[in-house]
Length: 431
Image (spheres, helix red, strand yellow):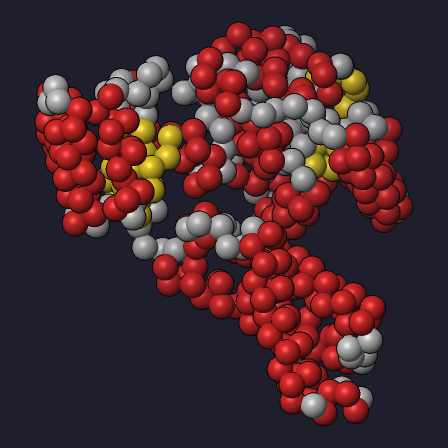
């Protein structure tokens, strides 16, 4: 900021006090705006992705500069030149984002040492999950169980609290970073004592739901219970958000639609030359609030491919034509769905709509599967960029957990992140 002010050709910035005060104020406001934007999240280097770091850096920088510019304009303390605005925005954004990316590169790759407290099947499920991740290291199981049993067996509450303090100190000495509770019912008294004392020893304690949502960007259905259900918020989007999202969807879809118009006859001709049958293919899908609608695609399968009934597509599916393989990998087959977006049946970003035949099966096999219908389905979504193409009930459950995260955290900023992360997937032919 000081350097940028030096470049401004106005007399009032010649005073050292004015320049220093303005730069100091900008620094304080910038720190606050970065926190509001979400960049100073606790354990930021482990939780935020590179996309989020860049996005939050830009948002925080822009917010801070707008606030400073408004104050300066109304107080006539100083008038910014256009080149100063550009210099401050670009330099601040680059310094903050590069600094945070380097921090994530250095610190974020260090595995967190964690302790899991629990005795039921949920502990086993979470243990299996974190053991397969390079981001976490489990502390020795015996070390935690023995100490917890000592606290549980102590009848005197004061003595139990002292033992809980000792246990927390042992965790600290062992280099533990995070403690996670894994209980489906009421938390045992001993664990409650430990949880109360952990913050006094500089250790974080969270439940399994918060852990998976924050670190894995998903909302699991394996741990679902009444308490969990009541602690979540999956209400439909606000009217303002729906209006803004719908407006952006329509505008972008119209632009993309005009761009792909010349491509339609070319793809249509190639489909006709490759195999017999129509150019387009349509089928019913389940959309917002369970309403059925007709989705459109370029045909990628042989004619009458589903004469025996609806089937999930599989790897090397023999029903797919030679050209269809390319259309699917490149996602060109999905382009006619731009009409579904313009028509309002779909959004650009949201859970992928499923066929009614599969929805009936999945609603019986997967808890909360129907919740995907709380939001308009999309061309691409959080599940599509976080999980591979699926063709089974187990895959549907895993993708649902990412869809639930999107439904809970839905925002225009998250949509922008998904949009930009979809592009490299298309470029490398990931489905």
